[in-house]
Every structure is written in C-alpha cells, then in structure tokens.
Length: 347
Image 1 (cartoon, rainbow, N blue to C red):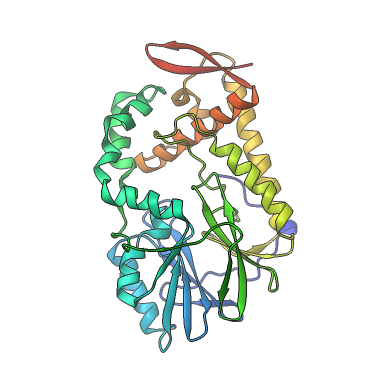
Image 2 (image 1 turned 60 degrees about the vertical axis):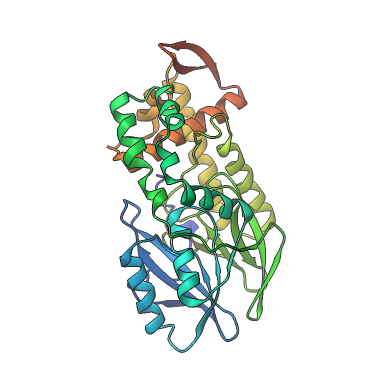
C-alpha cells in the first residue's frame, strides 16, 4: 500500500463519500454510491450515469445479502422513478462483477463488458472447485510457501473469487477504442492491464471525466499479481505500460472516478507516484535478494504487516509479479533451486 499523496498535488472535490443507500452527484447526471466489502479494503464505488430515461450502472459490488439489500434501498430511494438501463462491468474481480447476474435479472439490464472479463468470471463461476486444485497448491509450494500456509491460502485465500452470482448467458462486448453513447455523453473505452485482464475504463473528453476502475486510485496501488495459470507472466510490466499510455492519452486535469476511495484530480501526478512506488518495491526486493531467495522469503521485503489468508494470496502473487518483471529487466536472475523450491538472486 502506498502513502497518501501530498495534498498540494491533488484536488478532492468530494471529500466525504455517500452514506450506504444514498448517492452524491459529482457531475450533472453522474451519481456516486458506495457499497461495503468484508475485507481490509472495506468498500467499492458504484457510479450511475444519466442514460436518457434511466441510469446506466458502472460495477456491482460483491454477491452477498448486504449488497443486494443496499441495491434494493437505492432503487427504492434515490433512484426511484427511473429504470436502470444497462450494466457496465469494468473487470472480473467479484467486488466489481459479483452481482452482475442478479442485477441483470432483477432490473432487466443487459451486461456490457470486455471479453476477458466475461470469460474469466464465467470460468470461476462454472468451476469454483478448480481454485483448490493441485496446480494452485504446487504454485505456492514451489515458490517457497510452507505447506500449512499453502493449505490455508488455497482453501480460504481464494474464497472471495466465489462471491459471484451466475453470469447472464449473453453479454455485449466492449473493446479498446469503442465509443459508448450514454445519455448525452460520448465515452471512449480504454483498456488498462496489469490489475486485471482487459480492465475497461471510460473517458469523456468533453466533460473531462475518467472512470478509472482500479487502475489509478487515491491511496493505494492496485494489486498486480501473477497467477498459477500464467506463472511466468509479466503483469507488472503491463501495468506500468498502461500507466504511461494513460498519461499520453488522457489530460492531467480530468476528474478521476476510481473503483475505491475518493474521486480526485491529479491523474498524471498519481500515475507517476505509482510508477515510483513499484520502482521502490523492486529496489527493496533486489536488496533482499543479495543471497538466493524464494518468493515466500521475499514477502517481508515489501509487506511489513501481518497478512490473513485473503491478503496472503494477493501479497504472495504480487511478489511474484515484481520478480517476473525484474527477471525480464535483468535485475534478478534464477538461482539454483533448493529442495524443489525456485529461487532468484540479485544481479
């Protein structure tokens, strides 16, 4: 987790989030709601965009009764009298897509999302038991996590991925460069990588609004993880390139509407801070790897607080993301394995 940005670099036009079951108007025809999450990151932002005779919905919250009840309260309260027209989901993580199936059925909304988002969530929804398969256990074990910790992570750490309702059987694909007309606005679809495959962001140039999902947030760096199905992938390299691409495409003075924490102005400054944050983490790993180390042994180099099973699965996979990036950059090299555990060493 990164430090909060300096106050002089940022502007927070809406310092106080809306209460549960309520909304805040952050631009004409754009509403901000907030839903709780049962994790250390304890909320998700939901946005509603004026869509003519109703509201287009951006993201859903996680699949549990608390979230369903809050959607019912929103529909009966501040959103009453206008229908929900369509659901746009930014990426496959359950806090963003968890209630897509239920919301679509409850309010008769079509689902718009990227192909990777739909397929990734569909795979998890149809085969939740696969998360406990031997390939996942082996992934942790060969990178140095102790058997008892591995047993907890694969049975409890992945549990949040199952917090989704069954997806609608059809969806409308959105892709990079698409233009979405929502009410009187035109939004360009932009894709961010690294945090989730093909994460969708929406940019309205005329009104200088960027719905940034989890790509850029006020206080935290989004999790950037390597997963068992792609053990040598480079999500951190993808994430850093996405940040540079965002700076090139989107002006610095947009209002950033993130998936978590407060809306803010200061996109380029925050992107530069995130780039520097990951450079700092790479430097800490390189220092810790002066002697051969496994991914598990490198965890304390960048995570300094106790981790529960949910947090451990993210932290462990994020260390691997930095390792894989540094192996490509040549600042780490493979060392001899020890007892079947893969290790790296600083070059």
